[in-house]
Image 1 (spheres, rainbow, N blue to C red):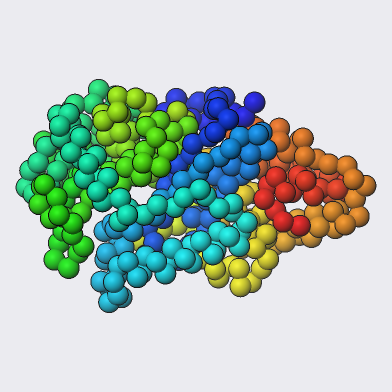
Image 2 (cartoon, rainbow, N blue to C red):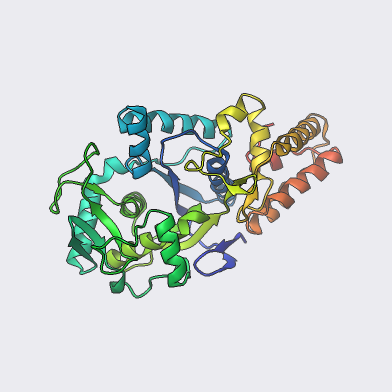
Length: 374
């Protein structure tokens, strides 16, 4: 049985789902090129999708594009281009990079700007249910109305306040009833896109976009929600609170989060500029080398990128391809399946294929399950 760590339950548990698995993974805010941190996240859920399909499930995976948000708008102003033109160009590059890494296509990749009517309706339902309030021209979610606040992250208030300040939550906003209340709708600054609403012209907050897209595409309860561990709070905590406040149903059955990618011991991020771009790596090495270099880690752990990973992965790919050409027809497929069922234990899975290749066995089916094209 496939077992995965569930963030909300804080333990590795069986992943139970019906014939159709509804999965939502947070995509990118497309204002810069795809870096290896993005690749790491996408490859985690690609491996999971491949194993679920191997088990006979149909996987309906939705991956959003946040094409209206503060960083994108700021970068567009800096470059002197329209924010949607910037978003379209970087989204296309993101999709090309993932395709090169043999990431399976998702069922849909909806954009926040394509869901404004749905978002306004969602906010209206929250206000009608007594879960929101207007102040200072914005609409806020009132966390005091949701008794399961903290169910995803399990963080204490001090940690929540620190992370909210670090990740755009603005706990010092004087219009909030509680510093942890979060924005559902906000006035647009001069030069920013704006849409009409009952609460004045403006644009949606970040968290409401994902709740709206997830439920519009997949229904009120989804089987698995994924993203990087930096999204646990505030993003996913806020998603769960506002979604369940509207529907009265569990929003997510299983929360799966990947670790952060570091460069030189510091988290890789666009804001810091310490990025290794996938497109640059693809100019130097085979895409399957990049894929192998990125998946050679436990997905939940924070990890460091170094170019040494490429050398190791290149040697591994050569051995695997040699085994496929000269193998005796044996397969490590079942052993790789067992490794993936243990919370996506890809390091052990890679070691299994290495051993089979060194023994001259055919590793083609096992490599294919790991998404490595030989």
